[in-house]
Amino acid sequence: EKKKKKNLLEPMLDYTRVVDALRRDDKEGLLASFKDAKFVPGSGPQAWDLQVEEGKFGDVSLGPTLDYHEGDTLLHLAMRNKKWMCKISCHELGVDASIVNINGKSPPLMHLFASAPRFMSTLVVLVATWFWPAIWKLAGPVGFVMELACFAMASADFFLAVRWC
Image 1 (cartoon, helix red, strand yellow):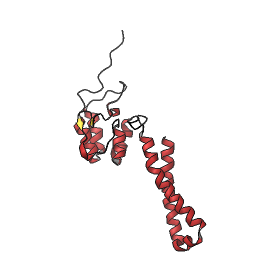
Image 2: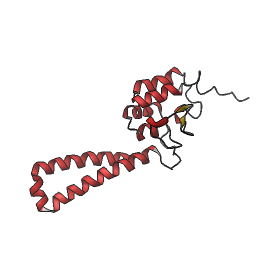
Image 3: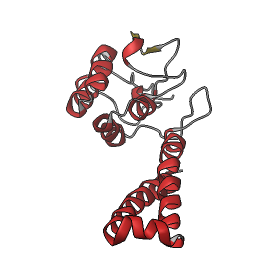
Image 4: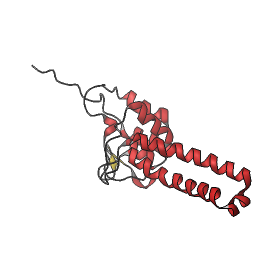
């Protein structure tokens, strides 16, 4: 006889607390929302992998304060709304980053699309400064070093996104 799995959450997860923590970018509040619900590890699909349906996350309307697309998970919402502390919480919780929303985008793909323009614009400026002496004279060595630093940061962001995909 197969052993029946326990409910994912006992008592029911309070999605109002989850969405409020997301709105405030409250890392500890988000983690506490799941901890207080007495999550049972290894019991199947996780509560934080829930997807937005009809503008609601769980039973809570996301309303005009959070940008969302149908099918977004908690990690999608954190990334789309630039809630970086909640993004860290999502990684600590183990949110599935491979889930795609209705537009076919996963969180890693969203990161890649967001970082590509920064990388390309700094690359263009760096190449222009290197190959056109007039720009080099205008920017000078200090300007070139600043451009190089910006390029290094944009490259790190872009290649981390590529690695994540």
